[in-house]
Amino acid sequence: MSDTDRIRMFAVGPDDPEEKREWIEALERAIDESSFCLGSATERFEFRCQEFLGIPHAIGVSSGTDGLKVALAAVGVKPGDEVILPAYSFFSTASVIAQLGATPVFVDLDADTLCICPQNVADKINEKTAAIMPVHLYGQTAAMDPLLKLSVKYSIPIVEDAAQAFGVRYRGKPAGAIGAAGIYSFYPTKNLAAAGDAGMIVCQDDELAGRIRSLRVHGDVGGYRHDIMGWNARMDGFQAAILSVRLDRLVKQQAVRTRNANEYAEALRSLDLIERVTPLGRTDGSDHCWHQYIVRLEARDRLREELSERGIDSAVYYPSTLPQQACFAHLGHVEGDFPVAESAARMVVALPIHHRLQEGDPTRVVTAIHEVVGTLAG
Ligand SMILES: Cc1ncc(COP(=O)(O)O)c(C=O)c1O
Image 1: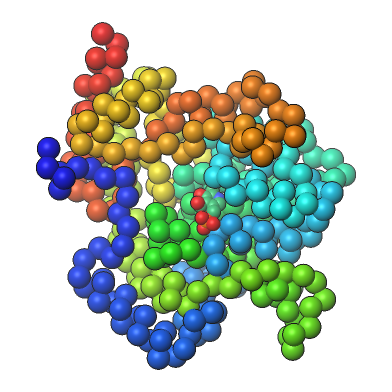
Image 2: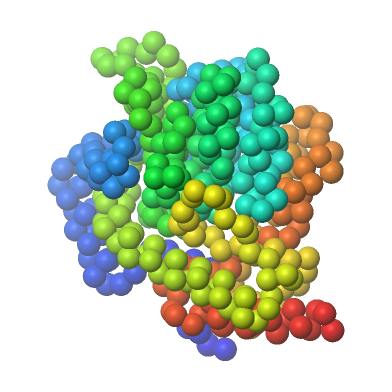
């Protein structure tokens, strides 16, 4: 098989020479304006996001991780507090909590969507709980209505990890701005992708937005005065310039991802694979940006090897749960504490779904899966 026939997992960098030229023009403008750390390029991108998402505050930061740390601090998370989060996500969903001196309180997932299970959240709320942090995993939101009810009942802010869900809506509200605040990541493999690290915090409240803007610049409240301590979490002007170009193309690219997801679902159905190679369920009320197309099966690792030999890349997000990480061993969790998350870590596989796939590629992937699964059964 030639390298060009390979179905790759990612589509990073400009799509074509025209987009590359647009990047260069955007970078030239940032250079001409000396817009390097925050500045005009970041302000333009922030304004574009506010319009695109229909929210009052979109605040550019250096990465999704830094955004999480700033957002949690802005809603008041401090040493000694607890923050409730799902046991299965990218590592920094948990590490930022610990870095603020708070304790990550892991809970198990909804078995159908692999997003946080609201009932498990309710069971863990106590007087130390300072925030609830759902993760909108793979591109659809968690079930937000029951979480919002808990947030109101106990006056606990929700900080959404919407790193994988830019532009997604839950009952009409933009992911990230449903609770108190939320973040996006623009890491180069995300749907809206920078050419390096970049992220964004969104919120509806003016006062909270002011605190976030201050915390991303060392807690400066103007004139080198620091009433609180923050971090250097400024957005890079070059990344903002490129992201503005990419935002223009996002709607078209999302349509291709949706087409790919539909083709996967149809091919899995028509080859009668749904029972053995199970796609995730959908959160009621959420749309989906298809950051990842996930299926689950027992022989995941074997399938991946066989697909690779047939010229098809795949990936695993994530091979272990957060409580299984050695750096959280002191929390004392043992195998069996989070059965849904643990089985996800063993069984999930992400299939290529990016916007450069051609029509027919998902069918080719599923046909190969069918072939492999047939051999496994035999
Ligand atoms: C769910 C989740 N949370 C947080 C992050 C961190 O974002 P970043 O890589 O921009 O720091 C990511 C990105 O990898 C993510 O997927």
